[in-house]
Length: 150
Ligand code: RB5
Image (cartoon, rainbow, N blue to C red; front, side, top):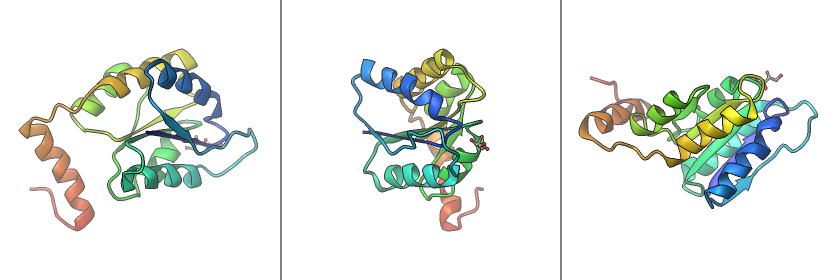
């Protein structure tokens, strides 16, 4: 299950990404907003991140004007590795090397077609799983429990 959430600035990207999910036959849960009325992105980033962190949803795709604010909010939730991507190479590497579990996109930064390409690559790329990348991801996550990367 892929969770989707966004503020008013990211709403424009939701339907294009739903099209990608439907093409890939991936079930999704849309938390909203589905309104263009101004709303606070931390609410949406936090709600989506909680579902990913709890395991209720496997991964999340979230949207705001830049992708930045909502990703910062999501990354405050333990267990979340949320990346803002504006290009396909970064999207692929964020999965292969960083095992990102959330993707943030900016509705005022990327157009719908680029957003679809980014999301598709991000959804289809597995984590590399090698010792080197696993060690580094573990170092990132260890900080959440007070472990300094060494
Ligand atoms: C809302 O105007 C805008 O600040 C928000 O969508 C996002 O871009 C924040 O990072």
